[in-house]
Length: 263
Image (cartoon, rainbow, N blue to C red; front, side):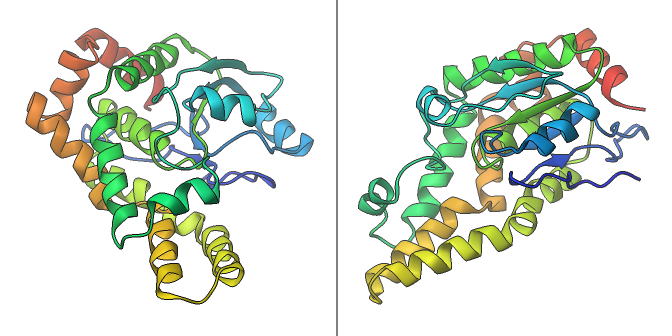
């Protein structure tokens, strides 16, 4: 069985969505759907690893400013598509420490901010457009793997993975476990970064509050994803109606997706 975590040296949260069983007894194919963090810092060896899969689509869910500041290093085998979920980054994955610190002085601000982000991802026009076009790209890609990513590979990417796996018939519990896997695979990087931040700041209660908020921004929480799900259910009844009524995927397109990405 292939490894779920890809062998990438200078990127974070590069994961394969293969091997998940669906409600009809099929399984998601390996090396076809890859959810990742930013491709901006990949080494030449990393690009070779992705080309050998081969990755044929690179779908970038980041905002305009993020793309300008840290453009993707695109594998030679791949076509690049920019499908921004937000016009600019609302997840704080790309904002400076100074920008975030100004808004994170009250305990719980990070957690509450992420709940708002996930609710918005389920409803705003730019997200609808990005997720619908993502499905179009998946339907059109008849060979090779698709990477879809944002900056940290956890929120916009996590929402996209939730919708894709739901469309393929993967059970909710499995999708939630995949979503939470981000915390495990990024723990060393995240906690090391937070420890360095704490070392660089004065040892005060305000620093403790800031660090706690930054941890909430830099990790995933099932409450975040469940906020999006609740928003979807409040507006459309369930995720399947969201896919068909809001994203306007036809039953035939859903069947094509399953035929393409399941075995």
